[in-house]
Length: 300
Ligand SMILES: [Fe+2]
Ligand SMILES: [Fe+2]
Image: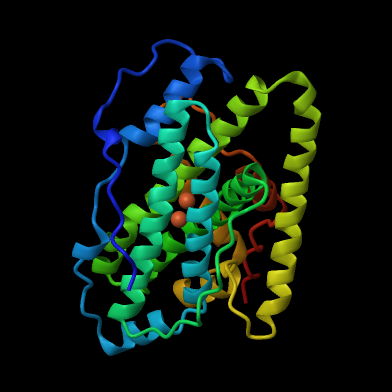
């Protein structure tokens, strides 16, 4: 049983947002991306979520998704990594925003824990979560991996909704969790842009090397995950196997198209002056161009 999480209190003090154009790396930029996260906080409480009763077939489909262990563990690790980085932040507003991010990761874990209990899903024992030695590295690994995973999660969630894989009540229950990940990646890419512009010049080359190393690490991790999939190990990159399960006969191109459209829709809700995650949507656009639609079959 997880302990109740204290709801952050300081989020109840909205301040005015900066006006006019915003230059990344300025005080106004920091205020805009921090306030956007804080002021869009959704105070839902996992404990009062009323889990809808599912038909036995729908419940079976949910239970058999190969994601629950890794999903719970990913949220647990994300909470610790984000909270550790927040603790070392000298800037009060930035710290407050990152603490809220950590709170929301912990709340995601709480929601998932309640879901697995409600539907009788058996979890593997959780590993011990270790405090990271390099909080900046762990915060960046969490942020960039959310940029990859959320992009696909948006599309899978939409496919599951369209195919009826998730009953409508479950879709409604999960909607705030999915939108929170959109807020997190929006916050993270703006933090990264602000951070690299405000650090001393001599730290910048090291930071850029770190960014490149994080991406290489995430690619390597996902290749490892793909290999493990064949061995029956649960993974957090269930995009393709998950797509088959949640979207029936959806093809890769169609799935990427849905992910791209959903990403644009979810990101479109926020202040247009904020930077958006670019890497994964750009690669997705490229993939859409390369994966041309199959030619219509010749008339018999
Ligand atoms: Fe999360
Ligand atoms: Fe997140």
